[in-house]
Length: 345
Image 1 (cartoon, rainbow, N blue to C red):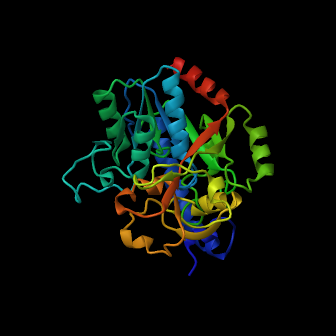
Image 2 (cartoon, one colour):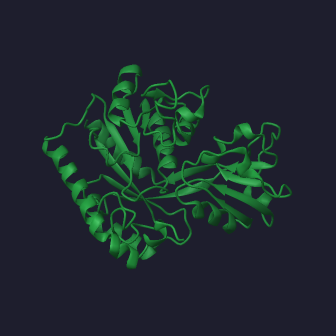
């Protein structure tokens, strides 16, 4: 049986059946946003500018590499950024004795925070606080750190959290699917929401980006459209027993087990194939919590996974396992625009 996501890229029989539910979903989201904008519902604000990096397409668009890029760029510009996150996949308060909000630490169990917050913290060394209630996370990080700008990893629809700048990340290949909201389509909000965000970043790292629609978007919003690509870094060993790093070129022509528990596993598999690797695909759901038994593969072939997967698998002592970090590449003009806005706060 096909997954519901299979029907999200086109108008079809299934999407039409679910369209009335999607209409109600969009209506609820619209009025909820309207109530916050009008003041009927109160947003929590702090005396620090909040930059929300989110999306209207559910999952797998490239927010985490962008957040890391933004944190590093702001630090170089003299700011003291901190990050708040939902902490998807983290243990709930019922499953652990650690309450919300939680300050991410590399010494603690990753299951307290989730994969993406730990990657952000390890990559940037800036404070990261996770909490399903992002407003509460914002209050804690403003009180307990000396940060002067807060970046929210996701949370475009978390209107209870006041924000100063909004950035939407869009996969340039999938774009907005069939244009319908959940569950008939992949959208958390209608595409009309894009008119109100400050910047729209198109992730063009996926081969097959829709160049025509991308050009139309730039013509429609010339001042707020930017593109993001990935710089592929050296492949790193998952185990400390293998000290050397390698490049994708070293794996060219070789058969590998490719593991991806991200929003769009096909993006990772395609990347490896385009670099000459022969891929045995092992897709998992986004934020999947791996078990050692998930890696009962033919041991004659190496395993290559994403960095997001690697942080959850380091304790498994997998032989011949590697992960591929990526680094976002973005027009520096975007940073100039963001800094100019921050100066007006």
